[in-house]
Image (tube, rainbow, N blue to C red):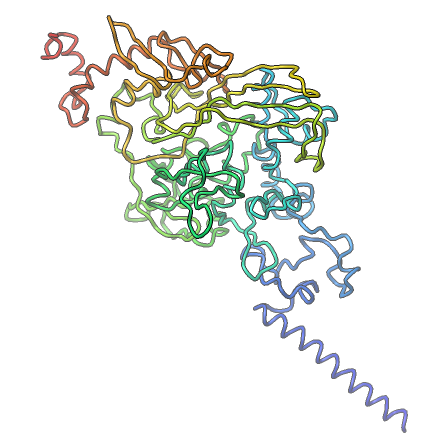
Length: 589
């Protein structure tokens, strides 16, 4: 009887303990706003509140992404086989590939992951040969040449799959695979939030140096200044991570007036790739000005609904049409035309609705045949950051940190710039045959040292097309395009006409500056139309002699007819014909 009595007491006590533990688990889960979790990880990791709305813990749990034993409450057993960051590219096939297989395939081939564009330019810059290697191939080269070593020491810190733990300065952290772009930090949450609402600060982690258009969009120009003004005990104009400073200039109108983030324009296919092995980012980028300002509408497709649902801030209502890209008919789900025919643009981060200004082809400046070759950027880009003359010192016998091997290896580099400027961009013919802004891309004077002795010197001079990301509503003036030597590609200096000949006196004297070239650093072409520098993309070029003469010839007319309100532009072809037939007052002179 006594044994039976104690047995009953033990059963009751055990039942109470089980009920208490179960209640504790239920209450812990209730505090997280969900029912029982699919695995036991969150029982210990109580500080993880969420991973983002698209990856709810109540459905995915933790082990489905991180691995480990989701049934064990023992720390060692639960963590066995676990991956801390499954978003790194070496793990994504196994973990992220369950849901994102199509995206992973595109990302693997994207220009941002392969870095073929950067490596291709560097090889052309140092060797004169276009060799488009990928990061994976470069990493395993045992005896890297000058080009490859330069990339590993000076460029590869910005690799998408960079190891985040190597950065001591928290402001300079980048990499981590998918989370390099899609990861954001939330106060009070120890887990990175996964999101498609990507803030521009994620883009600026990398797009702030050679990819300086990231700074330019927000009106910041990297200068050789001192970070002034001095406020609250420190410099106020310091570029993320420290060590560099900026001047505050006009920001792009899309930021200044509409506060559009980078992802408001750039599409997932333009950023994460289309699955093809492109060599240049120009080939991969999808978005164009006409996609929004001369939109092409259609019914939302499945991908549009998926993107809008993932975004969570933008709705696709019944009867609405969305814009599609002109290049490859990809959905722009945040540019919509409602049932009343009204067109609105929606910001992706907060869903705010904005009116959009459409292109008016009836205006003289857009309809003139002589302007059909102009890109939007040629007229509407206000300024371009340009670093002319990059001096590279290479030391074969010194060691420097290798960003791919994560250790110091032989070969060290130092960079010095000599002629940093911002101004209206130089213009030339881009790879698509359009008139585009040009800037240095790159100009390198290389000195190679070994054991304190100079053993080799060479230089490579290239200009490249840019979208400056400094768009303004007001375009450049007619005079600025037709008689500004910088715009024409001649460089900074004085330009005048004497005895029907062009005379140009440059400001920058390369020989007096000790450079081994006979033309100014900022000169793309001479007054005769001779191209002075190479181009970084086949098909690009400076204006030839005939084009220069034709552009400058219009200046004599622009002196009087400087505004499009002038009556000659109402029917320009008729005005030109009457001028050639000497029926106009000015044709008599």
